[in-house]
Length: 120
Image 1 (cartoon, rainbow, N blue to C red):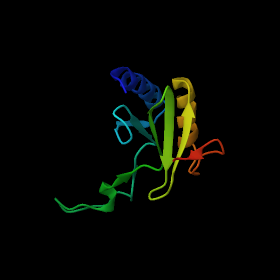
Image 2: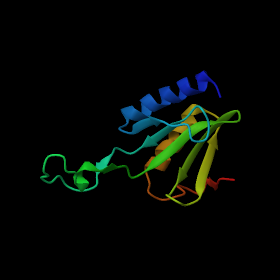
Image 3: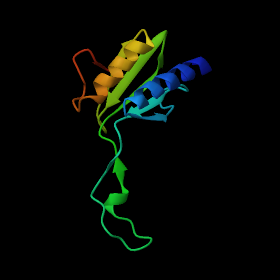
Image 4: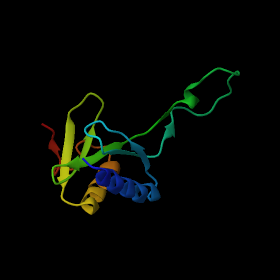
């Protein structure tokens, strides 16, 4: 994978950020990749705590995520539930990858649609 791949993913990340998603650079399945998540949420409402003490309100999480990276001559999106199988969908273009990412982030269903297949 090349620097160009990462630059293209970073550009896609900026477009997805403009839609309200959060972008993290993560190299789980290759050197060029991004993890796109829904906006972080608090685990619990804010409560008073003594100085130096943490509460559940200090914990943040995100509901959904999709991992995007180059694959062969195209791109791959990957989703999974914690501890479950990975589901992938491959695309030829970055614009198609953006649509697939938005599809995955728009539903809590895994896989997001019948077009996704279980990863090898």
